[in-house]
Length: 189
Image 1 (tube, helix red, strand yellow):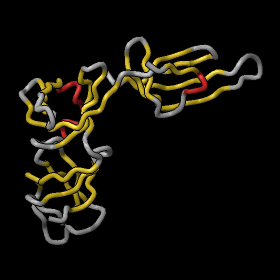
Image 2 (cartoon, helix red, strand yellow):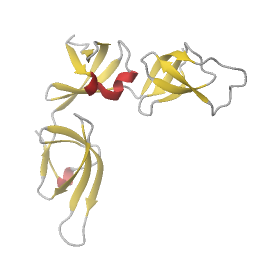
Image 3 (cartoon, one colour):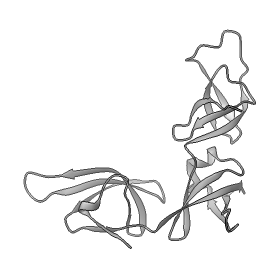
Image 4 (cartoon, helix red, strand yellow):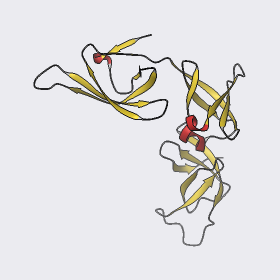
């Protein structure tokens, strides 16, 4: 396993501390007036999403985590776990709803997603940044409700609720930004 020292650290790097994989989300190199330089980082856990602050001095080391991304097909939710299948080996993996997290509200049956594994155990799911979903419930349009700034709530086929313009109707397919949870545009179908 690769080992990182203070000089190797940078934003976006994945590291492992005490057996837990983290991603560096903020990086600051500090040169105080007295004493040696050090690095202050904020790290986000891949396991529970908590953000911690840590300081590294010259000589401090951390390991590279044993992480693997696999593209898998989402099959269904059994009430406690989401079931995924490796389309090459047909092996199925169950991931708890808690570990799937926010990604669950954007997933539909048959969707391809990235599953993150740490030491062979599935620890998270990442959906594409833009997905196309069908509107299953929204308020009807009324004459004069076409101002661009006005929006109405719409429930999507996955159960997620987003704000959409008044001209978009129930039954239409829209493109949604899963990072911000916002309507982008109507899908061209």
